[in-house]
Length: 482
Image: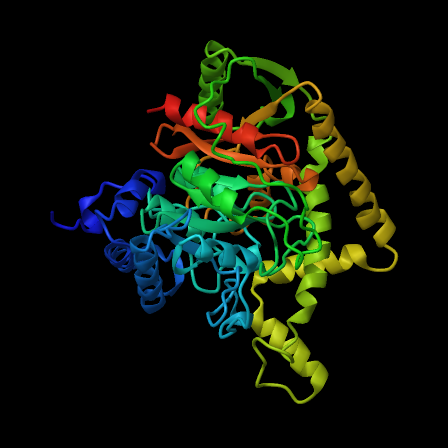
């Protein structure tokens, strides 16, 4: 029988192709070559910063050999892209910034070690908003990423390159990071699945920090099952990450296929207000009806402190960012200005030349709220509000198994539409930042399209470490649309 090539397969997900790989109907080498070709054909989308053509083919050969020897890993042959703020030894890690343009990592992130051990094949690093600061992938030093469904529109951010690469079938899955919606919002804009796990569920060792008490790594995939498989691999305690949760990792695939009968789903009234695109509201209403017909109980609830979430988030996350980005000074690594007559001038010039406008804006805001005379008025008060927002969610989960909301107030907007109005851009994350403030898990799953045929993603949330619940409901919604 002729060995299949990657182009022989109408691939929708890794789970669908896995049996072809394990039965050796297609080699990982052929599959990798196919996706590298797709990446090359899609360069105009600007989804990738780095291409690992040689390294990926070497990995593919090793995985083929492991399969032949009966040692196939749990993710053997998964063609994976990685957001460029997750480090891999010997490869560039730019974070989408000029200040790290030529930085090569001396070590590998825990999530990468786990994925490669499971047989994943990494084909490149994806474009992103600079230091993950953005909601549209327009702040990258390496240019705008285009949405594969409409090249005139943004893919969302900051993990826009990862979401675009998956949506364009240039890889089977990608890793992103989520500080305030940076996995879920681009997943929604590109019509794919993206999860922000519970804070502490996935190791942050090797993730370049933006907001250390917010950041989480998560997978972006074409199916809920793929997403669960990948999270299964990367979740779990890591002694190299002091915020890593020392808790057992359940099998996230066990709830897939279960119905929603008897589940109570909360519907926060604060997420249905002014500014929500009518098509998204209509999709939400249809989804609610579908869930009720399947036996779920829909319960209206209130998260009363939601209105303070955006302001609270941008005080706390910029404070953490201003501290985290102090290390980029032109001395130890990264960009160093050649136009400096003194040490102080070198610091100033290196940072001025290395950072883009949005990063500078957030550093200044963070430094301001941490400064003497303003710390109590802003930062300390914001920490108290964060607790109130978190308490709202914990109270909701006393009577609800999960919550259902829109992921974003609109579908993908035009490139350049919001770049001149930072506040308007920040409001793109109005439905996602409360989840990061509370540290709970949330997933974005495609649930329809608007009147321009652009994807609409809805968001499911659950109590801490209850990813199985949101996978269960997300899988139900996914299958109901087929």
